[in-house]
Length: 368
Image 1 (cartoon, rainbow, N blue to C red):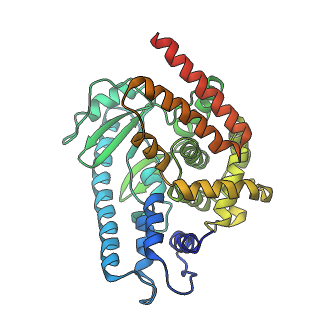
Image 2 (cartoon, helix red, strand yellow):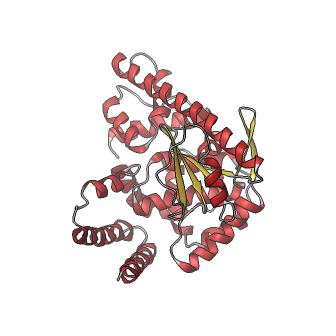
Image 3 (tube, one colour):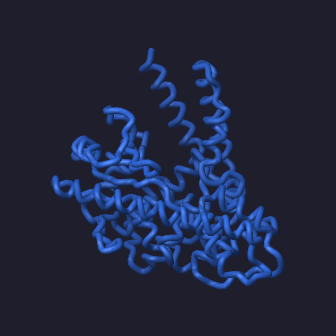
């Protein structure tokens, strides 16, 4: 672990737990903030920088830039809330009860909700209400949508300037048939049978059950790790969920879910990093396993190297323009993903490779 990485994680821990910064000497702010940018938590570290002593603060020029990040995130959150509240109100008027995935449900679990870096609005409505919900939300003022077609992928996007709303028919794409059935049952329980209600600025929102919040937040991070690159922002989300719901979780249900989706080993490995790097109390991590240390070191290197979506951005930048070369490029990337996983998770690597190749052959056969 480099000096800059040590400083970055120390600042991140101070932000997550609102504790003093445990760093002696000068902070390499250029390297630290570059990591924060790649890992999607610039706003969190900007807040910590503001409460340091003068000898450890960034330069006045950088400090002004960090303050702009914080103001921009706050303004974006305000716009998102206005649009989200309008969308939920409209759907409820027509008998549709949406559930907010990630976003404000997770932000409310941070010490200061305004410091979680905002992304898209993810609104789950389910299969039965999906088409009606898309039609209704397209009537909201100021929205822009790419096309009328909604039957593509797990969600449909509507844009409101710089605010993107993803309307979900399902919470995640699970391409393996057997795992899809297992996940569908988990989703049914977490999003339809026992969702929570939370107050956000005087407005009531539906969010997933506690157990599904833990499961889905990690599943989302794991999906990023296996495909596009995961950052400490998503791992911080997992830590905050576990901390907020400590002592309130049905652990046997979680054990069943992780085991049935073949995620127990990845969960314990990433969990080791939550404890070791982010400072999550070991008692708050279900199924902690210290023997995951070796795998955790491998995973740590991948996380620090890639960050949030970095692999996906590299894939897009290097993607050939000709269709035949695109297929070859995608085929090569499948094996890159395999070798990315196999060092720490050999069973998961072979499983993902089998699914990817099966889906690739299936698509080509359908086109022919």
